[in-house]
Image 1 (cartoon, protein in one colour):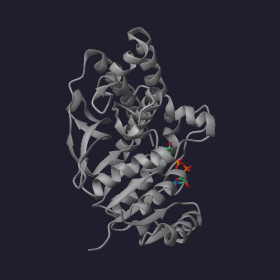
Image 2 (cartoon, helix red, strand yellow; image 1 turned 135 degrees about the vertical axis):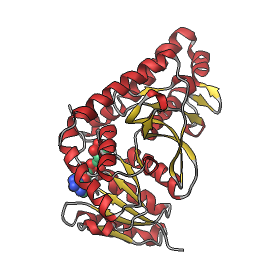
Image 3 (spheres, protein in one colour; image 1 turned 90 degrees about the vertical axis):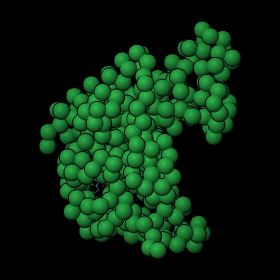
Image 4 (cartoon, helix red, strand yellow; image 1 turned 60 degrees about the vertical axis):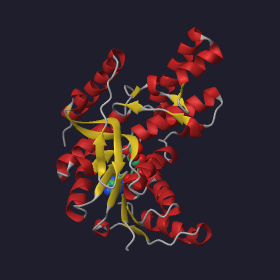
Length: 316
Ligand code: APR
C-alpha cells in the first residue's frame, strides 16, 4: 500500500519543524513547498541526511513548483507572514489574505480531494477564506488553534501544580485571539478538577486569583513568546498541527478543539470557530456541542463577535 502524501505549503519555522515531526513518526511522504528559492530544497535535504540517524524511510521533497503538491492526501498551510513584536494576529490580515487566497487556488487545482489544516494567522479568518476559495466540504477543512491554546493552558496548569503534563486535560474554545475561551470548569488532572487542586493548595480565595492568572497567561501566550523571541512560536504550533494530522491520517478519532465551520452549532452559522470535534479519517467527523454556562456563553459570544468583525471586514 502506498504511503500517504502530505503537502506542507510554507517552509518557514513551523513548516520545517512540522516536516521533522511528521518524518520522525512516519506519517507519510512529504513535499515542502515555499516561494523562497532553494529554501525548501535545503530544508528537506537536511532532513533526508538525518534519516539514517533517525531511521525514517520516506520520500522527502522540497520544491518551488506548486504542482508538486499534486494528489496530496493532506495539505497543511503555514504560508504567510508571522507576527513581530507589537503586532496582533489581526494585523496580519491584509497581507496574509492575499497569500491564502493564492494558496487556496493551488489546493483546489492540485489537491482537490485533500484534507486541509490551516495555521496561518489570523487563523479564523484565513480558514474561512480558504473554504470560500476551495469550496471544500466542512469536514475537509479546519484550522489549528485550540489544540495549541489548550496545550499552553495544560502546560501552565502542570507547572503551577507541579504535576505531570501527561495527566492534565485542558480545553480552550472560541477564536484564536485574546478573546479565546479557556474552559476552567473542564480543566482536570486525571479527572480531578484543577479548581479543587488549586483550592487544596492555596485556599478558595487565593485559588481563584491563581486560576485567573493561568487563564490570562493562556490568552496572551502567543504574544509572550513573540515578546521574547521577536517572532512567533514554532515548536508548539507544529506539535499541535502534528497532533491533528496524525489523528486524520491514522484515523485516531481524537476529540480535539479545532477551528471548524459552524452551521448552527453553538448558535453560530457560517463562521469558523474553535470547538471540540472528533478528528479521524473523515476529517471533522463530529462537532461536539457543549452546554455553556451563562459566563462561558458571554465569553464565547465576545470571541464570536471578534471573529465575525474580522471576517466581515476582510477585503482582497
Ligand atoms: N506560498 C508558499 N509559501 C509562502 C507564500 C506563498 N504564497 N508566501 C509566504 N510563504 C512562506 C514564506 O516564504 C515563509 O518561508 O511562508 C513561510 C512562513 O514562514 P515563517 O515566516 O517562518 O512563519 P512561521 O513562524 O512558520 O508562521 C507561519 O503560521 O502560526 C502562523 O502566525 C503564523 O501566520 C504565521 C504562519
